[in-house]
Length: 325
Ligand code: ATP
Ligand code: FE2
Image (tube, rainbow, N blue to C red; front, side, top):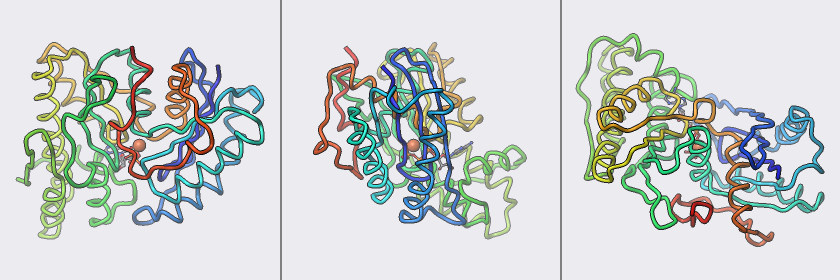
């Protein structure tokens, strides 16, 4: 079967096409780059302005006709209300007009499942780090159970907010990574791990203050990464040791960061575990949405229009993982 996935929870209008074997047939992404933070209404407008050409682009790329598509999958949540509504409306329209089954999927679970597909891992410990989310998870009794998570903002959001305060364009994560490479001096910043949970608001405020009190931006970026990534690695390591797992999977937009990858790889190695990251699929994309749709459909999940209502606060552990036996 062939699934067309529509991603649009915030900045990325992504259309992906994938088949049941996991072969990617198309991956088209249009990214909204706001001057400051993401404005939900403007982001939704960006999606409605770009979704048509992205669908056409993906069909062109795969040499398929819309009638070759067996499933329309879309990101049902979590995300910004206006964005989710725009994507759900477009997905319902395609489904109704062309009489193709529809499947609303959880964006966070999609980040995990594309990571599993690309890594070949069957039962990994997962570190999911993105703009809105920071979670350490493991599948147990048909749910991705949250071992630890942020108590306030997601790590990507923290990096983006810091970037905005010091004059970097959105998204700031990749720019902070570049600046951090040139940092030399480590500046002490608050390190907040509570049990297996994390908090990033203190390190954010302190880093902004350091910059304002004339510390060099490269050193602050370096210190911000070292501190916040160490927090992530600490909790992941605790889970790994406690659960005695053999695979560590990094996913979500912040997973693009090479320094974070290296830190986790080293930690995993010390525990005799393998480490993987879905290199081209960490950031939001339509392929991951299409793939999760296939997994659900092939496990006999079916949705009617009434089941496609968006869910802004759709949690990772709300989803019953019926596709893993
Ligand atoms: P979610 O709903 O999963 O939270 P999202 O809207 O945050 O999704 P993603 O594409 O998963 O979207 O992640 C975007 C985040 O990743 C942004 O905060 C961005 O700054 C961050 N990011 C991207 N590349 C890097 C990088 N190289 N280093 C650090 N952070 C990065
Ligand atoms: Fe995401």
